[in-house]
Length: 382
Image 1 (cartoon, rainbow, N blue to C red):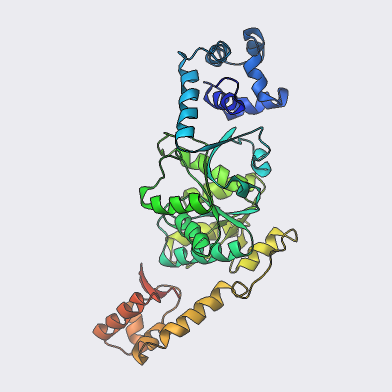
Image 2 (tube, rainbow, N blue to C red):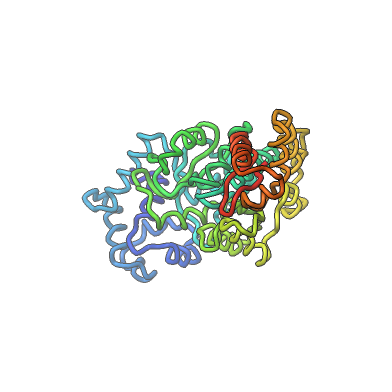
């Protein structure tokens, strides 16, 4: 165990009082960070390592498995073998170069799936866990089309926008990468267990946390820096003004990544975060081409007939096909709706329908996936 390079890096991640800031300082002085594990106590003290860190390193040198840090390393290695979890360290050639240059890059990534995907150009998807139906649809369609343009969709497997983005890529026949905030032996959230299994089978799941680590609130901002760090840019689909998505967008900007935002209704709370980002300089996005243009001429993904159309024409085509099966009353209600919520009183006035007939038509349109209820009334989603 003590001679395995991965074990040495695992020990570095376990050293007490040896956080990201301290590691970065030492990397400037000792590019081969694992050299710390061969140094004597006096040299380690001169470098400013805490007493607890020096004691753990000494136990490692003496192969003293009674020390708790050394035991943790052995347990992690055994758990990784048991669950077929790969370990990608800072020194590995497959460690993603773009991630290596963020200021708090993880020393170790745990992996399940195709690590070759880490060499692909990636686009991060972030957004509300309580996304609207329109937001979920945007996430799915943009993920499918960006995947078809050879960008790898990367997100966090959370409920809402994250899950829709992963599913959009997978359902279109493309891989996707999920970065989670717990050990890879316990997919979180539980509602996405099957989705997570698909990600592993058809793409890649990664974490900086060893197997056995439960999901904790503090882990998710840390996870998000990896999502943005892996990506050329991040797409914010829906976000509130105080959401974690805005924190992730700020991280992306600090890392030199592009930030894209899809605008929404001025009445929608989950659109306000996107509007705030746009006012702050994020690129307003209506189509996949808006993203590709901003990323620059480095990208030359090929168009296919299926993905050449932008989201809006697809939506209109789908609506037209579904409307052909409806009667004139439902068509009149649909045409009276907009993409901002409208009250039933306004719709009744616009269509001339009594309340009972109007509600029947709205229910039928909602079952067809053409409209949805929203604060303030009903709105088109197709």
